[in-house]
Image (cartoon, rainbow, N blue to C red; front, top):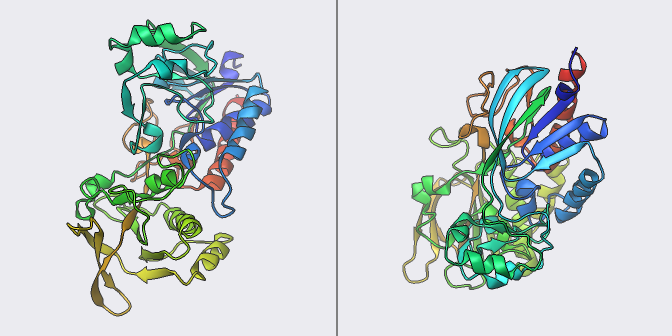
Length: 419
């Protein structure tokens, strides 16, 4: 018979599917450990400006989940933590965690004194490196847990003592060290999500060399009020308002040299971002270059609504190459119009690459010998007791990730309840 220890569930990944799995299992009465590698819960959803198709901000949904988690004693969560090893079998797993130092303890009140005392700056990971933040920082305005973090480079610098002395609550611990933790659980939900495909690998598109070629995740942050420009969509090269914008679909997706699959949400993300531009710049000209638009079921209505905008041109053709006008820094898109078989060059002020969702498990495998994956690196149902969820299992939007997290919770419960 299983012990009370192995009647618990480990959920790895604190994004939308992971939080959903953890909360649903906990509210069903099971002990849950939620492990997140980053300093906050919420995953990439926290970095969105709006959801589609309702175009509402993500914080309302996230806050509901945070409240449910705070109110449920069955959930114990760890941020800045990673799973190093899983051994055993369904119903009886041994798990080793590594807990990385935050250098800030629970006494933190988010007063910001440490940031004021800090001169060192680092690239802001929340904004995909588009701006700088202090090396003593709150990850974002609605971070959960609401607690500052010190960058390791700051801790090793000559500034560290002054930053520590600035805290009136004794919340900074410069001598925090990595530590290990052992858990026994009955089942595992692996919900580590996705990474934006590295657009630098798309050499013909010039990302990283041409400042006015950005990715869809960067556009999401540009449109956000807590983003690098306070929500103003501007060209990175000169801060000017873009008058023509090109969205390049399937940037690296459905391509055997990059991501061989369709991420399923990129079309809708670009349609959504076209509405961001339309709100700020009613007269802007928008091109959406596509192979085919994938907007199924209820999302077809959203596509139809965007398509009615006369200033949005849907251009059927895959962009082959992006060069740069040396004088204006404008991207020049070389594309064939598949309807007319005409090769064209279209100049825009800003080009947005709709890069796909690369599962985190494509590069960072589950540390368990029985884990199984498909040809693209997504987790499959090959190992009993280890359940994939959300974008670690399949490309998904927010709604689908929530549903998948609920399903994963049920599978995890079944794996131990039947023993």
